[in-house]
Amino acid sequence: MLKSHELLGFMSPALANDILSFIFESDKPAYRATLAAVAEAKRVRPIFLERQPRAERHTAMLSALTKPNLDPAAAAFIRAWLVKKHAAMLIDFLNAMEIKNENGVVEDLPGAVEDTKLKAAVELLLGKYPHETVAVYLNAFNDMNAAGWTNLKALLESDSRLQLGNHA
Image (cartoon, rainbow, N blue to C red):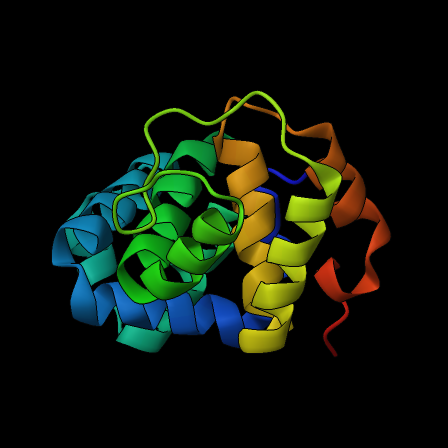
């Protein structure tokens, strides 16, 4: 099971940069919180990072977010991207699993899910969305939710379409 900081390290640099650019453009509070967490970890003031050219700052931020001590910031960062940009995917998955949700957000998850429903929901996502995005979502979902579905963990470990780190 990958933690959020590991997800950022294993995903393609293009996707990591797309996520950071999306958060920069669409969710200023999440971007500022991420920037502040990175600045604190680097023992600099946020203004130091803000004054860097954006490409250089984003490279430094993404590098820092792959460290274990910034896992909470990486989790919030990924969660913001998923909820704001990929709500349709979250809704599709939860609806296919027949889990009550509000715009892809769930209060209480069941302790276990049927294999057939899970596999059908994953196939739906893989048929509709980019595989790497689906892999990030399902890994993040598995990591961030206390339910800990063993069949989802097994699927993430065994299905090659859900593997991260296969980028060049």
